[in-house]
Length: 137
Image 1 (cartoon, rainbow, N blue to C red):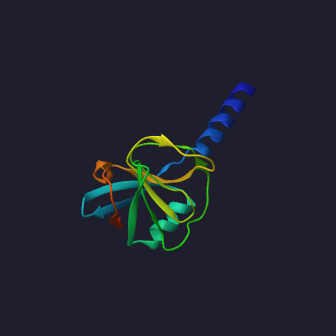
Image 2 (cartoon, rainbow, N blue to C red):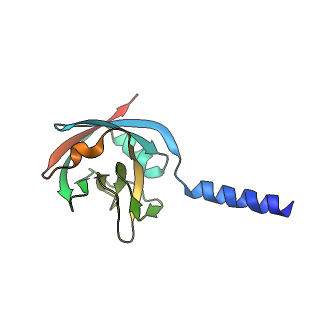
């Protein structure tokens, strides 16, 4: 019985720290193509959805990501160091990032916003681009 209670507590704790995908989806459009993304369910992504639609000028950073400033900061939440191809995140509270390569960031890490479900390699080229983020009904 004690083992069952401890096992349930560990599973509950693990589930609470893992972002769960929400039903919210967005389209990210640019002159280079369009992709869709599923957002995680956290305070930052919920606030982002309230701000949509958005146009965000993006610049290339370290040949691994496109990054741009949001019009206002998003709420903070748990951060992580690792990212994968297609990760949408926040570096600072107002720095929106689309990762097109795998990697790891230094402390304090990134806030997860979501994950691109399309071909994020459209952003794997040097130079700036303006994206538009729209909610998919």
